Image 1 (spheres, rainbow, N blue to C red):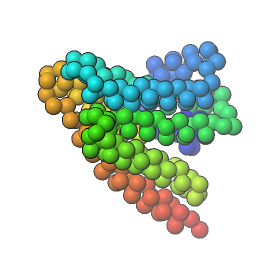
Image 2: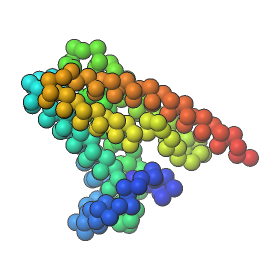
Image 3: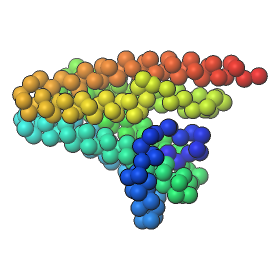
Length: 219
C-alpha cells in the first residue's frame, strides 16, 4: 500500500523475514511502488485468463489452468503487499501513491472475478455470478474508501475483505485442479463465487455500520 501508515491494511506477512528481504531487494533494484501496483493488474489478468481457458481444455490441461489462476491471484496479492513495503519502509512514497494503490486493485478484482465466472463457458449462467461478485468486490472497497472521505478511519472488516476473497478463490482453485485431474465435477469455483457474493453483502453492511457509528460518535 502506498498510503500513510494509519491507512495500511494489517498484514502478518508484512512482518515476515522473506517479505522484508524481497522488499529490500526491490528497493535496491530501485523498483517503483507504482510500477509494482501496476504489475498486480498483469497477474490478475493472468488469473482471469486462466479461468476463462478452463472450459477450452481437456481435464489434465484444465487442472493446470486452475493452478495458473491460483498463482496469478497470489502474485497479485504479493504485489499489493510489496508496493506498500517499498513505498513506506523503503522511503519511496509518491504523491500519486494512493491512486496507484486503489485503482489497480479495482481492475485486478474485476479481471479475476469476471474471469472466474467463465470457467463453465461464455454461455453459462454462471457468467452473471462472476460479474456480480466483481461488482460487489468493488463496492466493498468503495465502502471503505468513502468512509475515509466522510471522516472515519479505514475499515478493513470482513468476512470478505480482499485477502479473504482471494484466499477463498485460491483454495477453490486448488480443489478444482485436483477434482479435474480425478475427473470429478469441478464446480467449486462457482460455489466459491456464491459464497463470496453473500460474504461481500455482509461485509458492506458491517463496514457501513461501523463507519456510521464512528461518524455519529464525533462531537
